Image (cartoon, rainbow, N blue to C red):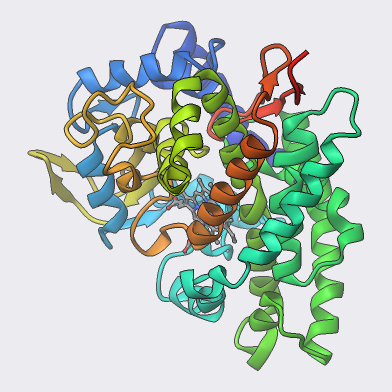
Length: 427
Ligand code: HEM
């Protein structure tokens, strides 16, 4: 298993890592974004560099776009497929090896996770669980989200130096998604650990040790869900995972992959939306004042946080045939990188994009949840958690401030903080 994993790592990440490092050393903006050293603020500078080269320039063997309209078009265009480990852009021998080294683990970046599966299978997976995440279904969770939030905020008081990521932002989303999926509260810390090791799988050019840890944990994830879904198959409940097993429509592998995806997607990014939001709001006290005076602005503030510093910076698609777009021919098999962060700073759509403005009228047009058939399934849930949690935090602790600079997460595509020590009260 480890040897197969290594081969897979080498083809998926290792070779790419060397290439990206080489590009970064030459100052190439793509290399810099993927593996360069100035991680957080640097990325917007490189995004601008890419924008200067055109709407969908060819760069280092791929196409890249930071253009809002093109990102949205491509995400909604059925001629573009999701990116899988053996996607069409790869040479045949590599695709053959990828098939041979398939580890059969519930990796969120590999099929049959719906995120990386094209229709018609994608349609089937999404249909099974879609209703449970509709805005109408999610509104019913409001009271529970408020309850969990209040409880977490109360507990912050007893911490000598509360960490707003570890003690708050990470705890709320995991508690809520675990309840939706019907997973017990005792599992929270294990789920968080699995999330920590699994999140890097959405990145490119991982180090071998990071990939290996993720794979080792995925073996446990698979074992856990296999067992859990066995139980649900015998006796389904009214949770979302039971919807995946009911009727026996999906194979066990499909069930486990999508259960693991719902779990990871359900908290990994929301943690970062909350963390990025806290960092932004504490840096913009004028915006906090506005929110204190007009609390009805909170949902819009969440949209602006998602636009200004969305957790997912980039996604990708592969052209399944030649496609003419913005006076360019994107060849069949070409990988197109879509900079969601770039799209959200496109001043054709968001005037004065560098300004953080919680009253921005069209903030909700951001692409931080993607768009089209793969548009985020959990968007309504994330929005509700964001508005409740951020409002409650700042209303309960109006003198809240960060105790030193927050520590950024080493991840690149997921924009996040790992730790955010804070002082809840004025000295
Ligand atoms: C602020 C929080 C969140 C952000 C920024 C976010 C972002 C995204 C993005 C960008 C995509 C599309 C990726 C692509 O097309 O390549 C996506 C898909 C997805 N998200 Fe979210 N997400 C968030 C929260 C959630 C939550 C709470 C859930 C709960 C289950 C969730 C579940 C999913 C699923 C299942 C998909 C795949 C949908 C499909 O392929 O049809 N997400 N998300």
